Image 1: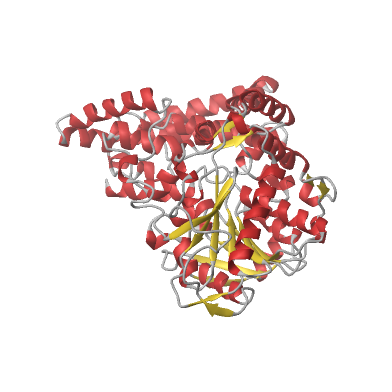
Image 2: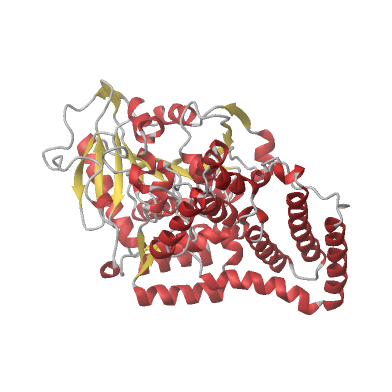
Length: 560
């Protein structure tokens, strides 16, 4: 039982919706993957028949106990010894392995083009995950649990199922929300809202050391989730770590829009960010700031930097850009990029325009089916077959606390996805100014994760190249959110670091220096050089012009 709980915790951090830059796909796009699989059968029926015969022969060997098929020993769905020791369970396991392997072999041998092959493999993997015997009442762990509890696990599992059918759109709940509350055990770093406009609140955090660096850090979070991923529990809070290092810190908290804000676009967010930067400059008495922008927040930050360059303003000294993909021509490296097509993007844009917003809950449901083993079937087994409560992890609570995107901003993001305008001078306009990223002259620190399936690391590498050859690129051995939330002391953490220079991703990886542990201290060493002189920490937050208001984390983050 503890092993399953640990596994759910690991997948929680690895497979959040997080700050997804591809802005959702339609449920029908999953059908396109299935059509690619079916198309392989229709186009080459003779080849399909031969593969079917080979599959039937293997199933026959499974039935008589002669099969030698094995599953990956790292597949924790089948970690119960009964899957090997019990003849029935071993046959179920081998039949499942034969089905998955047979589908994969057939797709590989088909005449589909590379994109349709990849789509077909996705459809086949979703199907194979769905029919896994571990998802049924024949799961030996579930059977033992039912016997040990006198059937009470079955009753509790049925109650959980009914609850989710009524309250969670039929998907198994991924988190027990009862154990979390913003301001009680999340978002505890002390600070105050020092500025609010229609689009954002700006939070200034209370210094925790006597002397601070004069140039502040302004954090621009993604719009698709709330900002407090950087301030979860105290032991993993990025905010607390930054404050302990003597940086002055301001964090943007975006307002959660409704259909009334359907016309907010990229320029709206850039204008609001500019106002926030000006407030941070005024309060800290610094002529410029360092800017953090993660994922879609990194796109907003890049658009802002491009606008500053276009208008000749120097308000930002350096940029930190974790898990951000500015060159969206590399988006096909990701699962969602694989499914998106021009037709599907047009249909999605039209649907969002009619509704006024993209609902984060809708994004989460589609996204779950792209990673069903981690985001659906794990919880199916835990909640329904074993009769457990959903797990209680802060990162899962944050992930379920979704936001909406205004239709106009969503359309701008789709255009970024289609056209990759950050790589094409003049293709993107912000506040009436054509953007050319070659004119942006700031130091950059770009972070990516080796196992990130949302913003693949090679695509993030191109972000560093866009900011110039002196950009520092960091490759952590983690997934999407873990690449950001990587506090010192995290188990098995390591990263590679080097300037991008004139390398391609592979040559950079071959020459970069490997470091053990979290990248946060490495980043702090980089930041200290770019954060100005040490000065006395302010005695109170805000200024005469921008007085400290409500306590952090503010009011916008509380809005549903």
